[in-house]
Image 1: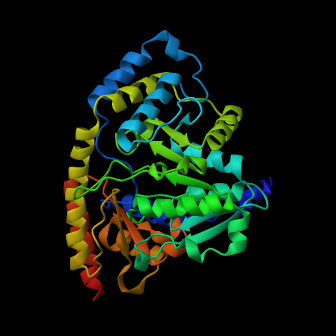
Image 2 (image 1 turned 45 degrees about the vertical axis):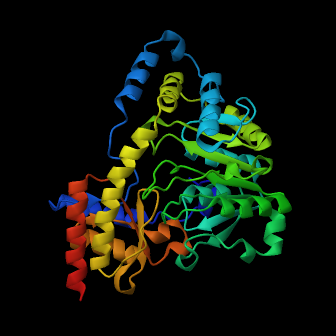
Image 3 (image 1 turned 30 degrees about the vertical axis):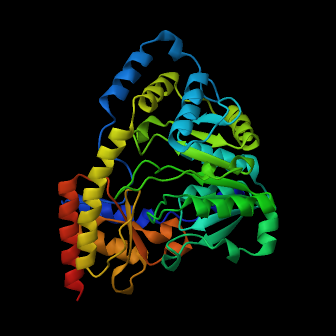
Length: 390
């Protein structure tokens, strides 16, 4: 049986060998601590769960949902953007509901780019930007994010011929996997570049509500005139511990939002209406105190990891957002070698940086979504493993 040619374009799954080693270790009776997955370990707030129960009991919610998201949900997203970012949105023309950001990111790429087009993708980054551009038949231009530039892209380094053929430019701040943040001035530079070359600026704002040391992330749409060239993805997954609920929205440029909605309506359905109703309650019940309490938990864990990395000689600047720690591999190992080393020698899983793009080679990612006592134990194990190297 021969697969479609597009499948041959997908890169090999770098976690595959790591998964094999993890299963081997567990089969041998070892206790493995997994710090490789960015999935909140805390529960969804109880009032949101109760809202879902109530909405799920209503018969009218058992029918097909609106493909683009219910009007009440889209209006609530617009109201949240007005309150949170002082950005005005037309609920019907500039918002669309999503079954999580991932499907929206994929569908937008298919709607906007194809053979002969270029999609500018930061490296390292969330792999879906890269893989969906390949599957859509577009060419990917990798834009390196390096520590010397605080993991911000250098737009001036993009060749002119690339810019002229580019249809999309992805930005993701606060950033996965590096934890880097961007200022409104940086977003303004991206908006101006996209305006000059008629490129759609695609902002993935998945980690906006996680902040440390008083930090709170801006939206790219706060730049004056950004809606002329920009679309943004806002997810409830990370801030409300709702990853399994699959609820998000895309907002901004009406042409891009409309194209995304058209493609979605031809490929999938909308979010279960009861989940939308619960999301409305989540956003309308003053979520800021909850965001702050979650950030305090992650900040405590961040500080535990920072202290341990310093003792390992792998110290990094303290990130201001996300629940990720991006740090260099020990003793010149490749990222896959280092991931295997920590699984075999410390029984701890960390994500290899190369799985997020070529520029991620030589780096590792730790997720803070692990109970604090287990995280402490993991860091002690990792310190011991590194000490045994010397």
